[in-house]
Length: 263
Image (cartoon, rainbow, N blue to C red; front, side, top):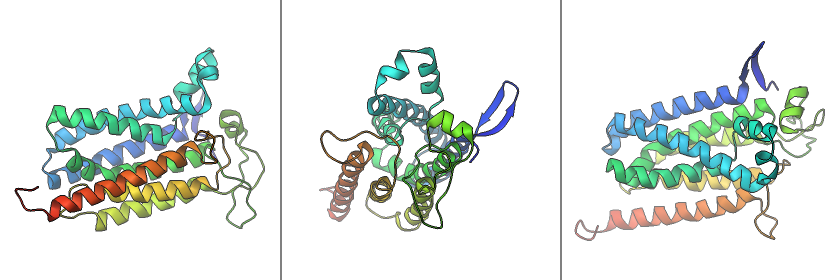
C-alpha cells in the first residue's frame, strides 16, 4: 500500500489523512441532507457535526494514550509528533463524540436521539472510508493469512510509520471492516427509519459492534486488553455499545407503543 499519496519536497499528503478528510466531508453532507427529516435545521446539524468531529479526534487520541501507554508519546518530541499524526483509536473517537453530543444537544435544544438517528449513517459511511485509509497507511493490520485474498505490505514507509510486518501475507482486516460498514450504511438507511426514536442509531451501534468484535478476532496489531481477560480493548467497548444499542432500541419501541400522555 502507499501511506503517502503525494510527496513533493516538504509537502506530504498522507493517504490516511486524505481518507479522513473525505470521510468527514461526506459524513457531514449526509447529516445535513438527513437533518430536516428529524426536525433539525441543516445549519445546526452541520455546526454540531463539526464540533463532534473535533471532539472525536480528541477522544481517539486519548484512547490511544490509554491503550498504548502515554510514556512514549508524552516524553519526547518525536512521540508528540507521532501522536499528532496518528488517527488514534476509533472507539475513543466515537465515545468522545457521544459525550460531546450530550452537551451540544442541550445547547442547541435538539433531541439527542433525533440527532443520533440523523447522524448514524454518516458516521458509518465515514468509518468505512477511514478504514480504507487504514489500509493505505498499513495500520490496524491482520494476522497471518494463507487465503487467496491475503494482502502483503511492501512499502517500507508503512513499516516505519506503524510497524506493520513487511512481506507477510495478512488478513485484510481493514477491508473486512470497510466492506461491512458500507453494507451497514446501506442497511440502516433502508431499514432504520421508523416511528421509534433512536431506531437508526441503535441499528448502527448493534451492527457496528458485532462487526468490530468479529474483525478483532483477525487482527494482530497491538490493541490492549480488558483487565485480565482475553478481550481486546475494542472488543470490550463493542460489547458495551452493543448493549447500549439494545437498550435504546427497547426504550424507543416502548415509548412508540405508549399512549401520547405516557410517552
